[in-house]
Image 1 (tube, rainbow, N blue to C red):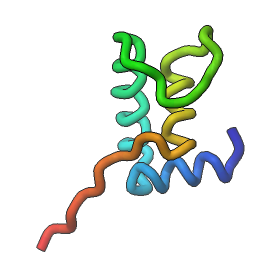
Image 2: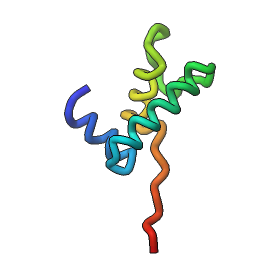
Image 3: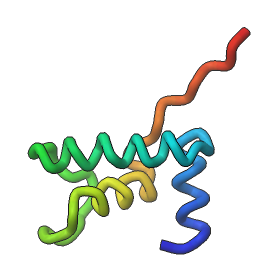
Length: 69
C-alpha cells in the first residue's frame, strides 16, 4: 500500500488513525466470523488484509462524529 492509499483510508476514518485501526479490526472480526467479503480477494488472504482493502476501496467507512455545539 502506498502513501496515497493510506491517506485515502485516513480520510474515510475521519482522519483518525485510531478510528482506522478500530474500523479495520472490527471488520476483520466480522469477516473471520463468516460475514461475506465486500471485495474480490484471494481466498487465502487474512481477514485483516481484506478489511483494509474494503476500506481503501470505499466499501466501508467510519461514522462521522457530529461536532459539539
